[in-house]
Amino acid sequence: MSDAETAYAKLNLALHVRRRREDGYHDIETLFAFCADGDELSAEPADDLTLTIEGPFAGGLSSGADNLVLRAATALRDAAGIAAGAAIRLDKRLPVASGVGGGSADAAAALRLLARLWRIDIAPERLHALAAALGADVPACLASRTCRGDARGDRLTPVDGGALADTPVLLVNPRVAVPTGPVFAGWDREDRGALAGGDPLAAALAGRNDLEPPARVLAPLIAEAVALLAGGTGLRLARMSGSGATCFALYVSDEARDDAAARIAGEKPHWWRSTTRLL
Image (cartoon, rainbow, N blue to C red):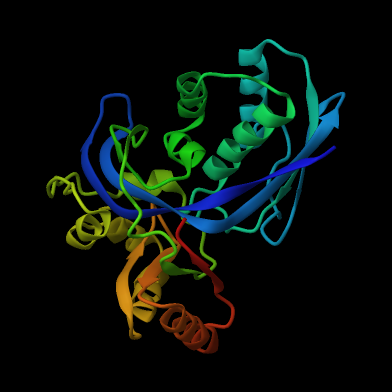
């Protein structure tokens, strides 16, 4: 019997970089939100642990032991002290190196999926620790709910995202991959202040993404994408997510979102787009 799980696309509604740490990471303050769509994983019991990757963004991805999905599977199996296998299939629908979770969301979905498939009863805090060891964004993707992230982004505080639920979202990527490392390296190390608390939309509107300026240097099309998203009516917020290059816009209605999607499709037919909504 096979089982399936969605690797929900992650958005950083705001992302403040406060300082570079001695361990090479950065202290950040961010607001995570998640879309209803993303990559899709499925798995069924097998003697060995294998990964098959398909879908529009499968090209060039390794299905070997270095893939975060298999690393997550191995970590979970070792933590549980079992020898189970699984044939995992990843339908890669989100652009790679694009600021919407990608491998982190896939790893988190693998943890959720295989915990069910292998019938592992694991404490939430232990599963969180496994996720944190895989990457800074994996714990937030494991929860896949609106929350605030501090420290590396893995110290999570739940946020009441009820007012944001079902908000129409348009994602746009000019089909440019932007590696995270060079974007952080391009940050000017200026602390521009803390992320506000309280209502998440108000905090996001008052906030910023400190990684957007260095990402725009590496990929100037990001500026064009944000401008196109912001050019319509019914807009709540337009910004780059994470370290880019995917940009997002929140709208007041499905009609406003769909009008923007149609307009951008006409102007940039080769860009990747996704019409979705917040969880």
